[in-house]
Image (cartoon, each protein chain N blue to C red):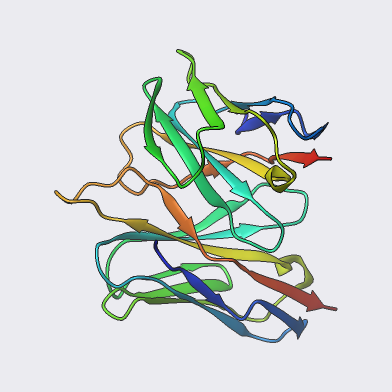
Length: 114
Length: 117
């Protein structure tokens, strides 16, 4: 059983460009959350998708947007990249009807903005 | 803004030492607390999901306790081994009005553990 997968592994972009990161959740999971981990900090919640809708959002600007597809996979889009967007982006999925919300994480995408 | 604090920030111990870390979180509107272990170049992996005041969980040499009234959790590692070297993260889940939650994790900054052979 494949766990959570993310692509690409690493990415280098230039300030002002746009980027799309992809996530496939663990089999049987319908909820996908995205987190940003900057150097020296814990992961910060960006948003969560459930039933193809954004269900919750953290304190991130509108430049950060997402999408969830009918197969539960998800994309994170960041427009007008800033140097401060350089970070590790983690995707996490959780199963149907969970009360504990235990989350299964992917290995992350390392984004570098130059 | 929720404040989740972990201490210490980093820890170096010798193989065989026992160690413990602390996670502090808001004592109101508690839904759950998670502990994750994150080894270098791997994905964060859930260690414990704790929901009730007084919870004690154990997995091998690792155990955790929870005090929701005072807002802290301890993670203990007995007889540390080099393979325990990792970043240990705690994450708080807030309870919304009506007792629901959607599982948004608010993380501490983590404790980096290095176990020397």
